[in-house]
Length: 352
Image 1: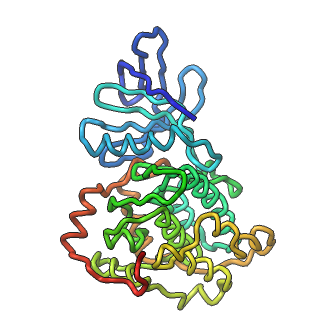
Image 2: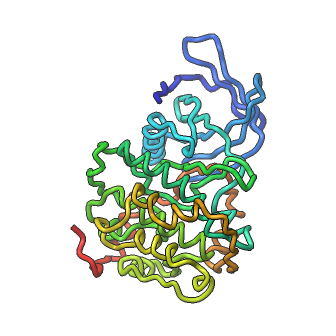
Image 3: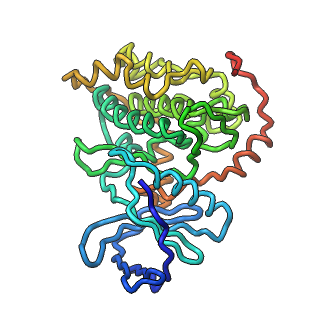
């Protein structure tokens, strides 16, 4: 799937509408702005309605004056122009003015996986595997194209609609990397979200798309327990926990979680990326296969950890909702953070 970026003159953007005029063409596009649904360091996302057709969309407005804003924009466009998958957010049109890029995207109205985790009083293994099947299939597809997401987390997984049968959409490709289709390229940029970042990234060594599998292990743990596998307010101690692969299946609700589910998590949260399951292998794991065919609806009674509740509270105050408006942690700040902490710890398994 290929998109041309339409050069446009921005006629008006206000509280109620945004209107574009194509350069060299008489037609224009006009959208009525309904709500602000996301805000980031270099972007904001608004829910809009096409004035003529009344069709709803989301428009991501990226400020490109700053270098970091341009990098995020280029990264996201490089991915979304190439992909076509039912579980990846779809890019409809792109407009470019002098200082901004406007990405018109399909609108997901069901909220984030993060919000569902916070809201649900119980969660089943079947619920979790249904979500994971969709996410794994999209990640397998991305990896086949040489694309690594590098910032997978519940906040970047959207429900298409509020219903229980909604599909999941992977979004926010601002930190994504595009390499070769063989899947054996190496990346070096230090980036991601602290609690989901793979140990090989923390070690500042060249890494592969296996970092996405690690993040999926963290997400699975959260879905089944309501807490994070690596939970520590002190950033240095958090990093050391990740580097050691130190997490636990002790306490509630883990006695009620199947051994297959725990094995699935363990095979993803493996320190050595060469031993970690790939997305393709994870789709064939017995837990995913058997739960997909199971009618079991056993609830996993559990409480949400204080860490996740704090995140939920802070996100309410930051107007973060629905479509992601971009990662808050810049690549440059990540490098500075790790260098200041001088992390030199070597994991139990020697990385290749």
